[in-house]
Length: 335
Length: 250
Image (cartoon, rainbow over all chains, first blue to last red; front, top):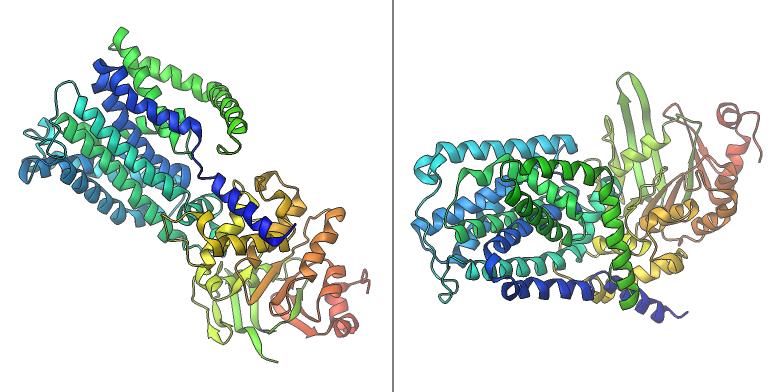
Protein backbone atom coordinates (compact mmCIF):
# COMPACT_ATOMS: atom_id res chain seq x y z
CA UNK A 1 0.00 0.00 0.00
CA UNK A 2 1.46 3.37 -0.95
CA UNK A 3 1.99 6.05 1.66
CA UNK A 4 -0.43 8.37 -0.11
CA UNK A 5 -3.35 5.98 -0.17
CA UNK A 6 -2.78 5.22 3.51
CA UNK A 7 -2.81 8.94 4.26
CA UNK A 8 -6.15 9.13 2.49
CA UNK A 9 -7.43 6.31 4.71
CA UNK A 10 -6.22 8.15 7.83
CA UNK A 11 -7.91 11.33 6.67
CA UNK A 12 -11.11 9.41 5.97
CA UNK A 13 -11.05 7.75 9.39
CA UNK A 14 -10.54 11.10 11.12
CA UNK A 15 -13.36 12.59 9.08
CA UNK A 16 -15.71 9.73 10.05
CA UNK A 17 -15.71 11.04 13.63
CA UNK A 18 -17.28 14.35 12.69
CA UNK A 19 -19.43 13.31 9.74
CA UNK A 20 -23.12 14.15 10.04
CA UNK A 21 -25.17 11.05 10.56
CA UNK A 22 -28.63 10.91 8.90
CA UNK A 23 -30.22 10.32 12.32
CA UNK A 24 -28.73 13.61 13.56
CA UNK A 25 -30.19 15.55 10.64
CA UNK A 26 -33.55 13.91 11.27
CA UNK A 27 -33.36 14.85 14.93
CA UNK A 28 -32.94 18.56 14.20
CA UNK A 29 -35.58 18.64 11.48
CA UNK A 30 -37.98 17.06 13.96
CA UNK A 31 -37.01 19.58 16.64
CA UNK A 32 -37.88 22.51 14.38
CA UNK A 33 -40.93 20.74 12.97
CA UNK A 34 -42.23 20.34 16.53
CA UNK A 35 -43.12 24.03 16.31
CA UNK A 36 -45.81 23.15 13.76
CA UNK A 37 -46.62 19.68 15.06
CA UNK A 38 -47.33 20.61 18.70
CA UNK A 39 -48.60 24.21 18.67
CA UNK A 40 -50.28 23.81 22.07
CA UNK A 41 -47.22 22.53 23.84
CA UNK A 42 -44.72 25.17 22.92
CA UNK A 43 -44.18 26.28 26.52
CA UNK A 44 -43.26 22.72 27.50
CA UNK A 45 -41.06 22.40 24.41
CA UNK A 46 -39.33 25.62 25.41
CA UNK A 47 -38.65 24.21 28.88
CA UNK A 48 -37.27 21.03 27.31
CA UNK A 49 -35.01 23.06 25.03
CA UNK A 50 -33.58 25.06 27.90
CA UNK A 51 -33.00 21.93 29.98
CA UNK A 52 -31.36 20.33 26.95
CA UNK A 53 -28.94 23.24 26.61
CA UNK A 54 -28.19 23.07 30.32
CA UNK A 55 -27.54 19.33 30.02
CA UNK A 56 -25.36 19.85 26.94
CA UNK A 57 -23.27 22.13 29.12
CA UNK A 58 -22.79 19.43 31.77
CA UNK A 59 -22.03 16.86 29.07
CA UNK A 60 -19.15 19.03 27.84
CA UNK A 61 -17.37 18.76 31.18
CA UNK A 62 -18.64 15.37 32.37
CA UNK A 63 -18.78 13.43 29.13
CA UNK A 64 -15.71 14.89 27.46
CA UNK A 65 -13.44 16.28 30.16
CA UNK A 66 -14.49 13.88 32.95
CA UNK A 67 -15.27 16.60 35.51
CA UNK A 68 -18.13 15.65 37.83
CA UNK A 69 -20.28 18.46 39.21
CA UNK A 70 -23.15 18.66 41.65
CA UNK A 71 -23.37 22.42 41.45
CA UNK A 72 -23.90 23.22 37.81
CA UNK A 73 -26.94 25.31 38.80
CA UNK A 74 -24.46 27.99 39.90
CA UNK A 75 -23.88 28.85 36.24
CA UNK A 76 -27.54 28.51 35.27
CA UNK A 77 -28.42 30.93 38.07
CA UNK A 78 -25.58 33.29 37.25
CA UNK A 79 -26.72 33.46 33.63
CA UNK A 80 -30.36 33.89 34.61
CA UNK A 81 -29.73 36.69 37.11
CA UNK A 82 -27.22 38.46 34.88
CA UNK A 83 -29.58 38.39 31.90
CA UNK A 84 -32.60 39.31 34.05
CA UNK A 85 -30.90 42.24 35.80
CA UNK A 86 -29.43 43.40 32.50
CA UNK A 87 -32.89 43.39 30.91
CA UNK A 88 -34.38 45.24 33.85
CA UNK A 89 -31.77 47.99 34.19
CA UNK A 90 -30.02 48.29 30.82
CA UNK A 91 -31.92 47.00 27.81
CA UNK A 92 -34.47 44.31 27.06
CA UNK A 93 -32.77 43.22 23.87
CA UNK A 94 -32.67 39.39 24.07
CA UNK A 95 -29.43 38.79 22.20
CA UNK A 96 -27.52 41.38 24.21
CA UNK A 97 -28.93 39.80 27.39
CA UNK A 98 -27.96 36.34 26.19
CA UNK A 99 -24.42 37.53 25.64
CA UNK A 100 -24.30 39.13 29.10
CA UNK A 101 -25.63 35.95 30.72
CA UNK A 102 -23.05 33.81 28.96
CA UNK A 103 -20.21 36.17 29.75
CA UNK A 104 -21.12 36.43 33.44
CA UNK A 105 -21.43 32.66 33.86
CA UNK A 106 -18.29 32.06 31.81
CA UNK A 107 -16.35 34.46 34.01
CA UNK A 108 -17.62 32.68 37.12
CA UNK A 109 -16.53 29.39 35.55
CA UNK A 110 -13.07 30.73 34.81
CA UNK A 111 -12.68 32.10 38.35
CA UNK A 112 -13.86 28.91 40.06
CA UNK A 113 -11.99 26.51 37.72
CA UNK A 114 -8.80 26.45 39.84
CA UNK A 115 -10.90 25.17 42.78
CA UNK A 116 -12.51 22.46 40.73
CA UNK A 117 -9.41 21.25 38.90
CA UNK A 118 -7.52 20.07 41.92
CA UNK A 119 -8.46 16.94 43.74
CA UNK A 120 -10.43 13.79 43.13
CA UNK A 121 -13.97 13.32 41.90
CA UNK A 122 -15.30 13.47 45.45
CA UNK A 123 -13.52 16.78 46.08
CA UNK A 124 -14.95 18.13 42.87
CA UNK A 125 -18.48 17.12 43.83
CA UNK A 126 -18.12 18.92 47.15
CA UNK A 127 -16.48 22.03 45.70
CA UNK A 128 -19.05 22.45 42.93
CA UNK A 129 -21.85 21.88 45.43
CA UNK A 130 -20.30 24.46 47.75
CA UNK A 131 -19.97 27.10 45.06
CA UNK A 132 -23.63 26.67 44.13
CA UNK A 133 -24.70 26.97 47.78
CA UNK A 134 -22.67 30.15 48.21
CA UNK A 135 -24.25 31.65 45.13
CA UNK A 136 -27.71 30.72 46.35
CA UNK A 137 -27.18 32.52 49.64
CA UNK A 138 -25.62 35.54 47.89
CA UNK A 139 -28.65 35.84 45.61
CA UNK A 140 -30.87 35.51 48.69
CA UNK A 141 -29.01 38.22 50.64
CA UNK A 142 -28.66 40.82 47.90
CA UNK A 143 -32.42 41.24 47.68
CA UNK A 144 -32.24 44.84 46.45
CA UNK A 145 -30.61 43.60 43.26
CA UNK A 146 -32.03 40.09 42.83
CA UNK A 147 -35.41 40.46 44.50
CA UNK A 148 -34.36 37.85 47.06
CA UNK A 149 -36.98 35.25 47.94
CA UNK A 150 -39.67 37.14 45.97
CA UNK A 151 -37.75 36.70 42.76
CA UNK A 152 -36.62 39.25 40.21
CA UNK A 153 -39.71 41.12 39.00
CA UNK A 154 -40.12 43.56 36.16
CA UNK A 155 -38.04 41.85 33.49
CA UNK A 156 -39.40 43.23 30.21
CA UNK A 157 -38.10 41.80 26.98
CA UNK A 158 -37.94 43.51 23.61
CA UNK A 159 -38.69 41.55 20.42
CA UNK A 160 -35.99 39.14 19.24
CA UNK A 161 -33.93 40.86 16.51
CA UNK A 162 -36.42 43.75 16.82
CA UNK A 163 -39.00 41.61 14.96
CA UNK A 164 -40.47 38.80 17.01
CA UNK A 165 -42.45 39.70 20.13
CA UNK A 166 -42.60 37.15 22.96
CA UNK A 167 -46.18 35.84 23.25
CA UNK A 168 -48.11 33.87 25.85
CA UNK A 169 -48.18 30.69 23.74
CA UNK A 170 -44.41 30.41 23.67
CA UNK A 171 -44.12 30.60 19.87
CA UNK A 172 -41.27 33.09 19.83
CA UNK A 173 -39.85 31.59 23.01
CA UNK A 174 -39.53 28.10 21.54
CA UNK A 175 -38.05 29.17 18.23
CA UNK A 176 -35.67 31.56 19.96
CA UNK A 177 -34.50 28.96 22.50
CA UNK A 178 -34.25 26.24 19.87
CA UNK A 179 -32.23 28.47 17.54
CA UNK A 180 -29.82 29.30 20.35
CA UNK A 181 -29.56 25.62 21.31
CA UNK A 182 -28.95 24.62 17.70
CA UNK A 183 -26.26 27.26 17.19
CA UNK A 184 -24.48 26.43 20.45
CA UNK A 185 -24.80 22.72 19.64
CA UNK A 186 -23.09 23.27 16.28
CA UNK A 187 -20.24 25.05 18.04
CA UNK A 188 -19.96 22.32 20.69
CA UNK A 189 -19.97 19.65 17.99
CA UNK A 190 -17.15 21.40 16.24
CA UNK A 191 -15.19 21.85 19.46
CA UNK A 192 -15.40 18.22 20.58
CA UNK A 193 -14.11 17.03 17.20
CA UNK A 194 -11.22 19.49 17.16
CA UNK A 195 -7.66 18.91 18.42
CA UNK A 196 -8.78 20.70 21.59
CA UNK A 197 -11.69 18.28 22.03
CA UNK A 198 -9.38 15.33 21.47
CA UNK A 199 -7.05 16.62 24.18
CA UNK A 200 -9.99 16.82 26.62
CA UNK A 201 -10.76 13.15 26.01
CA UNK A 202 -7.07 12.42 26.55
CA UNK A 203 -7.11 14.11 29.95
CA UNK A 204 -10.32 12.31 30.88
CA UNK A 205 -8.95 8.90 29.84
CA UNK A 206 -5.52 9.21 31.45
CA UNK A 207 -4.16 12.48 32.91
CA UNK A 208 -0.68 10.98 33.39
CA UNK A 209 -0.32 9.96 29.77
CA UNK A 210 -1.94 13.21 28.62
CA UNK A 211 0.75 15.29 30.31
CA UNK A 212 3.41 12.86 29.07
CA UNK A 213 2.07 13.58 25.58
CA UNK A 214 2.53 17.32 25.98
CA UNK A 215 -1.01 18.27 27.03
CA UNK A 216 -1.19 21.07 29.64
CA UNK A 217 -3.99 19.33 31.57
CA UNK A 218 -4.94 22.17 33.88
CA UNK A 219 -5.25 24.78 31.17
CA UNK A 220 -7.37 22.54 28.95
CA UNK A 221 -9.72 21.61 31.78
CA UNK A 222 -10.07 25.26 32.80
CA UNK A 223 -10.96 26.17 29.21
CA UNK A 224 -13.56 23.39 29.02
CA UNK A 225 -15.02 24.37 32.40
CA UNK A 226 -15.29 28.01 31.31
CA UNK A 227 -16.94 27.06 28.04
CA UNK A 228 -19.44 24.78 29.81
CA UNK A 229 -20.19 27.53 32.34
CA UNK A 230 -20.96 29.95 29.50
CA UNK A 231 -23.31 27.34 27.98
CA UNK A 232 -25.12 26.91 31.29
CA UNK A 233 -25.28 30.71 31.49
CA UNK A 234 -26.97 30.76 28.09
CA UNK A 235 -29.56 28.29 29.37
CA UNK A 236 -30.12 30.53 32.39
CA UNK A 237 -30.45 33.62 30.21
CA UNK A 238 -33.02 31.88 28.00
CA UNK A 239 -34.95 30.86 31.10
CA UNK A 240 -35.00 34.42 32.45
CA UNK A 241 -35.91 35.94 29.10
CA UNK A 242 -38.64 33.51 28.04
CA UNK A 243 -40.34 33.48 31.46
CA UNK A 244 -39.50 37.14 32.17
CA UNK A 245 -38.85 36.19 35.76
CA UNK A 246 -35.97 34.86 37.85
CA UNK A 247 -36.43 33.16 41.20
CA UNK A 248 -33.97 31.64 43.67
CA UNK A 249 -35.11 28.28 42.34
CA UNK A 250 -32.63 28.61 39.45
CA UNK A 251 -29.80 28.19 41.96
CA UNK A 252 -31.45 25.41 43.91
CA UNK A 253 -29.71 22.09 44.49
CA UNK A 254 -32.47 20.15 42.74
CA UNK A 255 -31.51 21.86 39.46
CA UNK A 256 -28.03 20.37 39.63
CA UNK A 257 -29.33 16.99 40.77
CA UNK A 258 -32.02 16.85 38.06
CA UNK A 259 -29.32 17.63 35.53
CA UNK A 260 -27.33 14.58 36.59
CA UNK A 261 -30.48 12.49 36.13
CA UNK A 262 -30.96 13.93 32.66
CA UNK A 263 -27.43 12.92 31.63
CA UNK A 264 -27.74 9.50 33.28
CA UNK A 265 -30.94 8.88 31.32
CA UNK A 266 -29.51 10.15 28.03
CA UNK A 267 -25.92 9.01 28.45
CA UNK A 268 -22.83 11.23 28.49
CA UNK A 269 -20.07 11.78 25.98
CA UNK A 270 -21.83 11.91 22.61
CA UNK A 271 -23.51 15.37 22.83
CA UNK A 272 -27.04 14.09 22.19
CA UNK A 273 -27.32 12.48 25.62
CA UNK A 274 -28.35 15.74 27.27
CA UNK A 275 -30.90 16.49 24.56
CA UNK A 276 -32.47 13.04 24.58
CA UNK A 277 -32.36 12.93 28.38
CA UNK A 278 -34.03 16.35 28.65
CA UNK A 279 -36.88 15.22 26.40
CA UNK A 280 -37.37 11.99 28.35
CA UNK A 281 -37.09 13.68 31.75
CA UNK A 282 -39.50 16.52 31.01
CA UNK A 283 -42.08 14.33 29.28
CA UNK A 284 -41.93 11.88 32.16
CA UNK A 285 -42.29 14.69 34.68
CA UNK A 286 -45.16 16.19 32.71
CA UNK A 287 -46.99 12.88 32.27
CA UNK A 288 -46.61 11.77 35.88
CA UNK A 289 -47.46 15.13 37.41
CA UNK A 290 -50.65 15.36 35.34
CA UNK A 291 -52.17 12.30 37.01
CA UNK A 292 -50.52 12.59 40.41
CA UNK A 293 -49.42 16.19 40.92
CA UNK A 294 -48.24 15.74 44.50
CA UNK A 295 -46.37 12.49 44.26
CA UNK A 296 -44.57 12.74 40.96
CA UNK A 297 -41.20 12.72 42.68
CA UNK A 298 -42.03 9.24 43.98
CA UNK A 299 -42.50 7.92 40.46
CA UNK A 300 -39.44 9.71 39.13
CA UNK A 301 -37.46 8.18 41.98
CA UNK A 302 -38.80 4.70 41.30
CA UNK A 303 -38.09 5.06 37.61
CA UNK A 304 -34.58 6.20 38.33
CA UNK A 305 -33.80 3.27 40.63
CA UNK A 306 -35.08 0.75 38.08
CA UNK A 307 -33.35 2.57 35.25
CA UNK A 308 -29.96 2.62 36.89
CA UNK A 309 -30.28 -0.96 38.19
CA UNK A 310 -30.75 -2.46 34.76
CA UNK A 311 -33.04 -0.58 32.47
CA UNK A 312 -30.24 1.66 31.29
CA UNK A 313 -28.27 -1.15 29.68
CA UNK A 314 -31.40 -2.45 28.02
CA UNK A 315 -32.47 0.94 26.67
CA UNK A 316 -28.99 2.08 25.62
CA UNK A 317 -28.29 -1.36 24.18
CA UNK A 318 -31.41 -1.14 22.04
CA UNK A 319 -30.50 2.39 20.92
CA UNK A 320 -26.97 1.27 20.04
CA UNK A 321 -28.23 -1.69 18.03
CA UNK A 322 -30.55 0.53 16.05
CA UNK A 323 -27.87 3.19 15.59
CA UNK A 324 -25.43 0.46 14.55
CA UNK A 325 -27.81 -0.72 11.84
CA UNK A 326 -28.15 2.84 10.59
CA UNK A 327 -24.39 3.31 10.77
CA UNK A 328 -23.73 0.26 8.63
CA UNK A 329 -26.43 1.52 6.31
CA UNK A 330 -24.71 4.88 5.94
CA UNK A 331 -21.13 3.53 6.33
CA UNK A 332 -19.49 4.91 9.46
CA UNK A 333 -20.72 7.71 11.67
CA UNK A 334 -21.74 6.57 15.13
CA UNK A 335 -18.91 5.00 17.05
CA UNK B 1 30.76 12.59 22.45
CA UNK B 2 28.26 15.21 23.54
CA UNK B 3 25.60 14.71 26.15
CA UNK B 4 21.82 14.62 25.63
CA UNK B 5 20.57 14.13 29.16
CA UNK B 6 22.46 14.53 32.41
CA UNK B 7 21.80 14.46 36.14
CA UNK B 8 23.94 16.07 38.83
CA UNK B 9 23.87 14.72 42.38
CA UNK B 10 20.22 13.71 41.98
CA UNK B 11 18.57 12.64 45.26
CA UNK B 12 15.08 11.53 46.18
CA UNK B 13 13.96 10.64 49.70
CA UNK B 14 10.64 9.15 50.68
CA UNK B 15 10.54 9.75 54.41
CA UNK B 16 13.60 7.90 55.70
CA UNK B 17 14.14 5.88 52.54
CA UNK B 18 16.62 7.11 49.97
CA UNK B 19 15.32 5.96 46.59
CA UNK B 20 17.81 7.95 44.54
CA UNK B 21 21.19 8.57 46.13
CA UNK B 22 23.45 11.22 44.56
CA UNK B 23 23.14 9.93 41.04
CA UNK B 24 25.44 11.49 38.45
CA UNK B 25 24.31 10.09 35.17
CA UNK B 26 24.79 11.08 31.58
CA UNK B 27 23.20 9.85 28.39
CA UNK B 28 25.21 10.51 25.24
CA UNK B 29 23.59 11.80 22.06
CA UNK B 30 22.36 8.92 19.95
CA UNK B 31 23.10 6.46 22.76
CA UNK B 32 21.66 2.99 23.21
CA UNK B 33 21.99 2.94 26.96
CA UNK B 34 20.42 0.53 29.42
CA UNK B 35 19.68 1.13 33.09
CA UNK B 36 19.52 -2.11 35.01
CA UNK B 37 19.25 -3.12 38.62
CA UNK B 38 17.39 -5.48 40.91
CA UNK B 39 13.79 -4.87 41.96
CA UNK B 40 13.53 -1.83 44.18
CA UNK B 41 16.83 -0.38 42.96
CA UNK B 42 15.04 2.90 42.18
CA UNK B 43 14.98 2.68 38.39
CA UNK B 44 11.41 3.86 37.91
CA UNK B 45 11.79 6.52 40.62
CA UNK B 46 14.78 7.81 38.67
CA UNK B 47 12.82 7.91 35.39
CA UNK B 48 9.89 9.59 37.14
CA UNK B 49 12.21 12.39 38.24
CA UNK B 50 13.68 12.75 34.76
CA UNK B 51 10.19 13.18 33.27
CA UNK B 52 8.74 15.36 36.04
CA UNK B 53 6.30 12.87 37.57
CA UNK B 54 8.27 13.18 40.83
CA UNK B 55 10.16 16.19 42.14
CA UNK B 56 13.74 15.41 43.18
CA UNK B 57 14.70 16.18 46.79
CA UNK B 58 17.92 17.75 45.55
CA UNK B 59 20.17 17.82 42.52
CA UNK B 60 19.70 18.95 38.93
CA UNK B 61 18.61 17.54 35.59
CA UNK B 62 19.76 18.94 32.25
CA UNK B 63 18.38 18.18 28.79
CA UNK B 64 20.63 19.23 25.90
CA UNK B 65 22.43 21.55 28.32
CA UNK B 66 19.24 23.23 29.58
CA UNK B 67 18.23 22.88 33.22
CA UNK B 68 14.80 21.19 33.27
CA UNK B 69 14.68 20.28 36.99
CA UNK B 70 11.70 22.53 37.65
CA UNK B 71 9.84 22.22 34.37
CA UNK B 72 6.37 20.65 34.12
CA UNK B 73 5.91 17.27 32.47
CA UNK B 74 4.42 18.74 29.33
CA UNK B 75 7.17 21.36 29.05
CA UNK B 76 9.79 18.57 29.09
CA UNK B 77 7.91 16.77 26.33
CA UNK B 78 7.94 19.97 24.27
CA UNK B 79 11.72 20.13 24.72
CA UNK B 80 12.15 16.62 23.40
CA UNK B 81 11.99 14.25 26.37
CA UNK B 82 9.44 11.46 25.94
CA UNK B 83 8.82 8.22 27.77
CA UNK B 84 6.88 4.99 27.91
CA UNK B 85 5.45 3.55 31.11
CA UNK B 86 6.15 0.25 32.80
CA UNK B 87 2.42 -0.22 33.27
CA UNK B 88 0.42 0.78 30.19
CA UNK B 89 -0.82 4.34 30.32
CA UNK B 90 -3.01 4.61 27.26
CA UNK B 91 -6.18 6.42 26.25
CA UNK B 92 -8.40 3.36 26.57
CA UNK B 93 -11.47 4.78 24.86
CA UNK B 94 -9.54 6.03 21.84
CA UNK B 95 -8.34 4.23 18.75
CA UNK B 96 -4.59 4.03 17.99
CA UNK B 97 -5.28 6.55 15.24
CA UNK B 98 -6.81 9.04 17.68
CA UNK B 99 -4.06 8.55 20.24
CA UNK B 100 -1.26 9.14 17.74
CA UNK B 101 -3.20 12.07 16.25
CA UNK B 102 -3.46 13.56 19.75
CA UNK B 103 0.29 13.38 20.39
CA UNK B 104 1.04 14.74 16.93
CA UNK B 105 -1.48 17.54 17.33
CA UNK B 106 0.08 18.58 20.65
CA UNK B 107 3.56 18.53 19.13
CA UNK B 108 2.39 20.69 16.23
CA UNK B 109 0.82 23.10 18.76
CA UNK B 110 -2.73 22.44 17.55
CA UNK B 111 -4.13 21.30 20.89
CA UNK B 112 -5.49 24.66 21.93
CA UNK B 113 -7.44 25.16 18.72
CA UNK B 114 -11.12 24.46 19.28
CA UNK B 115 -12.49 24.99 15.76
CA UNK B 116 -10.06 23.14 13.55
CA UNK B 117 -11.02 19.81 11.98
CA UNK B 118 -8.44 17.05 12.45
CA UNK B 119 -8.86 15.57 8.97
CA UNK B 120 -8.37 18.90 7.17
CA UNK B 121 -4.92 19.37 8.70
CA UNK B 122 -2.58 17.89 6.07
CA UNK B 123 0.51 18.07 8.27
CA UNK B 124 -1.27 16.30 11.13
CA UNK B 125 -2.71 13.61 8.85
CA UNK B 126 0.64 12.98 7.13
CA UNK B 127 2.68 12.68 10.31
CA UNK B 128 0.03 10.55 12.04
CA UNK B 129 -0.03 8.18 9.06
CA UNK B 130 3.76 7.95 9.11
CA UNK B 131 3.86 6.90 12.79
CA UNK B 132 1.06 4.35 12.32
CA UNK B 133 2.93 2.78 9.42
CA UNK B 134 6.32 2.80 11.15
CA UNK B 135 4.94 0.99 14.19
CA UNK B 136 2.80 -1.41 12.14
CA UNK B 137 -0.45 -0.16 13.64
CA UNK B 138 -2.06 0.66 10.29
CA UNK B 139 -4.32 -2.37 10.04
CA UNK B 140 -5.82 -1.85 13.50
CA UNK B 141 -5.85 1.94 13.71
CA UNK B 142 -9.65 1.99 13.90
CA UNK B 143 -10.12 -0.36 16.85
CA UNK B 144 -10.57 0.77 20.44
CA UNK B 145 -7.21 0.53 22.24
CA UNK B 146 -8.69 -1.23 25.27
CA UNK B 147 -9.73 -4.17 23.04
CA UNK B 148 -6.29 -4.74 21.46
CA UNK B 149 -3.89 -7.52 22.50
CA UNK B 150 -1.38 -6.61 25.21
CA UNK B 151 1.62 -6.77 22.89
CA UNK B 152 -0.02 -4.28 20.56
CA UNK B 153 -0.77 -1.98 23.49
CA UNK B 154 2.93 -2.02 24.42
CA UNK B 155 3.66 -1.16 20.80
CA UNK B 156 1.27 1.82 21.06
CA UNK B 157 3.09 2.96 24.22
CA UNK B 158 6.29 3.26 22.24
CA UNK B 159 4.57 4.72 19.18
CA UNK B 160 2.87 7.42 21.29
CA UNK B 161 6.17 8.39 22.92
CA UNK B 162 7.94 8.41 19.57
CA UNK B 163 5.17 10.52 17.99
CA UNK B 164 6.31 13.38 20.23
CA UNK B 165 9.55 13.36 18.14
CA UNK B 166 11.82 13.13 21.14
CA UNK B 167 15.55 13.71 21.15
CA UNK B 168 15.66 11.54 24.27
CA UNK B 169 13.37 8.54 24.63
CA UNK B 170 13.01 6.70 27.94
CA UNK B 171 11.65 3.16 27.63
CA UNK B 172 10.51 1.82 31.00
CA UNK B 173 10.48 -1.99 30.67
CA UNK B 174 8.89 -2.02 27.22
CA UNK B 175 8.73 -5.82 27.10
CA UNK B 176 7.28 -6.28 30.61
CA UNK B 177 4.50 -8.82 30.59
CA UNK B 178 4.50 -9.29 26.83
CA UNK B 179 3.90 -12.92 25.83
CA UNK B 180 6.73 -14.66 23.98
CA UNK B 181 4.86 -14.70 20.68
CA UNK B 182 4.48 -10.92 20.57
CA UNK B 183 7.91 -10.17 22.01
CA UNK B 184 9.85 -10.44 18.79
CA UNK B 185 7.86 -7.72 17.05
CA UNK B 186 8.26 -5.44 20.03
CA UNK B 187 12.01 -5.95 20.21
CA UNK B 188 12.26 -5.28 16.51
CA UNK B 189 10.39 -2.00 17.04
CA UNK B 190 12.90 -1.00 19.70
CA UNK B 191 15.83 -2.00 17.46
CA UNK B 192 14.45 0.03 14.55
CA UNK B 193 14.29 3.36 16.41
CA UNK B 194 16.26 5.93 14.40
CA UNK B 195 19.89 6.60 15.36
CA UNK B 196 19.47 10.29 16.10
CA UNK B 197 17.15 9.50 19.03
CA UNK B 198 19.04 8.89 22.28
CA UNK B 199 17.43 5.93 24.02
CA UNK B 200 17.55 4.96 27.68
CA UNK B 201 16.17 1.49 28.27
CA UNK B 202 15.11 0.43 31.74
CA UNK B 203 14.84 -3.32 31.64
CA UNK B 204 14.84 -6.58 33.55
CA UNK B 205 15.20 -8.82 30.55
CA UNK B 206 18.97 -9.35 30.17
CA UNK B 207 18.49 -10.83 26.73
CA UNK B 208 16.98 -7.57 25.49
CA UNK B 209 19.54 -5.46 27.35
CA UNK B 210 22.60 -7.22 25.93
CA UNK B 211 21.17 -7.26 22.44
CA UNK B 212 20.18 -3.62 22.47
CA UNK B 213 22.55 -1.61 24.63
CA UNK B 214 26.08 -0.42 23.87
CA UNK B 215 26.38 1.00 27.35
CA UNK B 216 24.97 -0.13 30.69
CA UNK B 217 24.49 1.58 34.04
CA UNK B 218 23.83 -0.60 37.07
CA UNK B 219 21.69 0.93 39.81
CA UNK B 220 21.58 -0.68 43.26
CA UNK B 221 19.84 0.82 46.30
CA UNK B 222 19.47 4.13 44.49
CA UNK B 223 23.20 4.43 43.74
CA UNK B 224 25.17 3.93 40.56
CA UNK B 225 27.14 0.74 41.26
CA UNK B 226 28.95 0.53 37.94
CA UNK B 227 28.85 1.76 34.37
CA UNK B 228 30.46 0.53 31.15
CA UNK B 229 30.07 -1.58 28.05
CA UNK B 230 27.99 -4.77 28.24
CA UNK B 231 31.20 -6.86 28.23
CA UNK B 232 32.68 -4.89 31.12
CA UNK B 233 29.47 -5.19 33.09
CA UNK B 234 29.24 -8.92 32.47
CA UNK B 235 32.79 -9.34 33.81
CA UNK B 236 32.51 -6.90 36.72
CA UNK B 237 32.53 -8.96 39.93
CA UNK B 238 30.60 -6.36 41.93
CA UNK B 239 27.83 -6.33 39.32
CA UNK B 240 27.73 -10.10 39.19
CA UNK B 241 27.46 -10.28 42.96
CA UNK B 242 24.89 -7.55 43.39
CA UNK B 243 22.72 -8.14 40.44
CA UNK B 244 23.41 -10.87 37.98
CA UNK B 245 23.94 -13.33 40.81
CA UNK B 246 24.10 -17.04 40.21
CA UNK B 247 21.69 -17.07 37.33
CA UNK B 248 23.79 -14.85 35.07
CA UNK B 249 23.58 -16.01 31.50
CA UNK B 250 25.76 -14.03 29.13
